[in-house]
Image 1: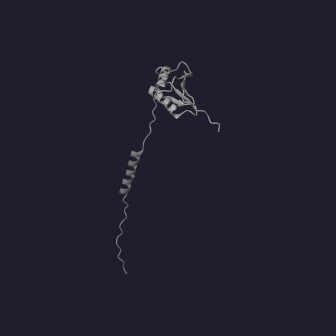
Image 2: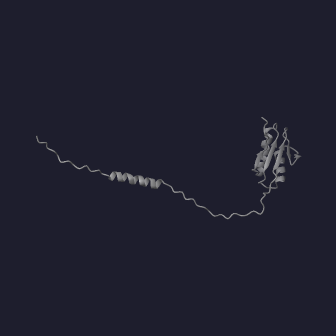
Image 3: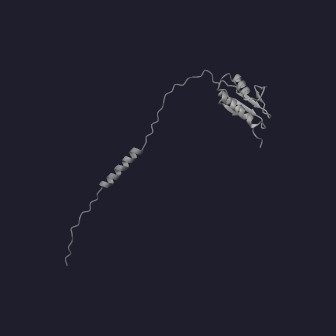
Length: 137
C-alpha cells in the first residue's frame, strides 16, 4: 500500500502586521508623551531698607444694640446712610485700601449692619471684616 503524500508546504510566519502594530504603538507613545521643561527666570528683587511693615489702623464702625453708629468713638448724629457715608469719607480721606471693621452687638438689627456695609461699598472700601467674639461653649 502506497500512500500518496503531498509535499509539505513550509509554514511562513508573516511578521508584517506585527511590525505595523509595533510602529503604531511607537507613534502613539511618541505623540502622547509630554516632556516637562522646567525653566527658571532670574528675577532681581528690590531690597527693603526696613524690616518692619507699617501697620495701618483700620477704621471701626461700632453698632450698639439699638442700631446707633459710633465711628472713632463718637456717636453719629443720626442713623441715615448719607451721614454714615460722609463720616467714613472724612475718616478715610479717599483711601480705598484702608481696612474697615464692623463691630456690632449681638442684638443689633440686621439692617444696621447692612447699612454699614452699603456705606463702605459706596466709598469703595473693599477690605471689610466683621468682628466677632469666641463662644464659650
